[in-house]
Image (cartoon, rainbow, N blue to C red; front, side, top):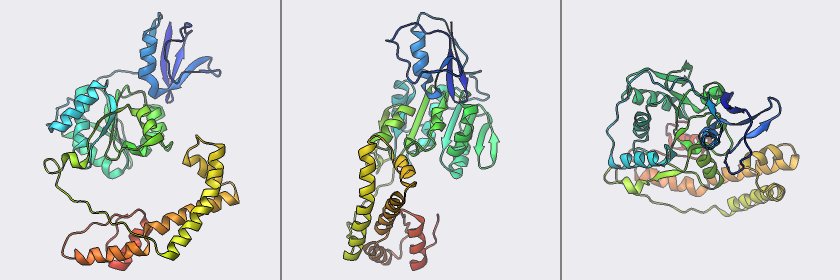
Length: 357
């Protein structure tokens, strides 16, 4: 007999596994402290699927009761939202949906919760989104909606939580939900707060984003949430479902002095970074920062990197271009996005524009 339980963000498998190496049990490793096998909780679906194929009796004690306290109501979906829901359902209810801002990803999440009808946890990056999601879910679910974050600690069978609150509490909550919805999932995958998804055993997962990551980060997000099941761009939806828009790209150059300082800063950074990469090809940016912070040359390289970023954030050519654009559109409503707070405050001082940071 095999027994599977949840323990502080992990799965513990007690009992003797038969010698069948063909059965895939990803993440499962021997833990000598408890004389049993242990795996990250997010591997629950794969591990249970593999264990069901064995000639052993499996007692699955990971989850408690799977009922919800209220009734779901399926929201009205646009055709592309309905197609995204079908694609996600066809991928065993585990996958990543990429839709542009304003296309109704929150409503799609409510439809996914209605389709699953299991305890659901929705993760959002900010406190503002926490309250927006809480209100939207209340339109499609009759029961109480829990709120974890911004001073609230109310857990219900359907709950919304900020990333930070989920990270702090998932070791205790990871086996209470059958569906995990992650808004702006591109914030994960780089190692920062990834444990919020790793410690959750929910077999159904829906990742939502308007800006899909790439490379190793995308691979990690796919590992945590499932494959990309639907991807649409602004161009696919503009004109009918989103407002028509135009994009103009201005390619600007640094001045000779800015270019000289930029090249010097990049050269200082590159020497230390390439040396690190040659010794640790699979390491992440966070690993480089941690290593570089321990030496004088490494700290100088990090300072040079930050300086190069500041030079390109708001150089003289951007200052001139912005002044001309504001003068040209002085009778229009204008929203200016910047890459950092320092640039936002510089623009605010020069043009008397109210900064929001």
